[in-house]
Structure formats: C-alpha cells, structure tokens
Image (spheres, rainbow, N blue to C red):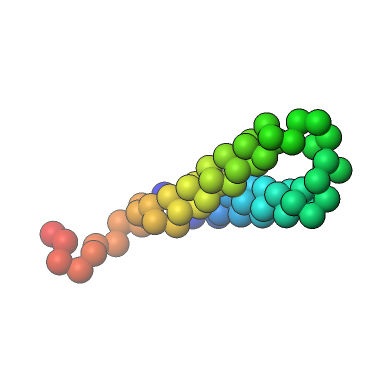
Length: 75
C-alpha cells in the first residue's frame, strides 16, 4: 500500500473513531442534548461509524506495503 494512502486512511479512521467516541460520551452524560428525539438511531449510527473506522484503521496498519523489499525467507 502506498505510504500516502496509508497515512490518509490512518488520519480519517482515527478522526472517525474519535468523533464517534466523543459523540457517544457526550450523549451519555447529556442525554437528548445532541440527538433530540432520534437518540436510538443516532447511537446505532455512531457505533457503526466507530466500528467501521476501527476496522479501516486495523486493515491499513496491517496491510502489506508495496516497497519491493524481500521478507526474510522469501525467494
């Protein structure tokens, strides 16, 4: 994976994860202040955003790079 793509995936997934986590924490301490009457749907969407962002983060950090360097034991 290209280092620039990996960098932006890292930044976007961290931003998505942190924003969803902050949104859930604020809504837990101040119920109804952020979402109004759509609390349940907003919670579910926030959780999905956080999980998808974490999945992208893990995938981007574990993906192989295309640098062409040989791994130990590879031919």
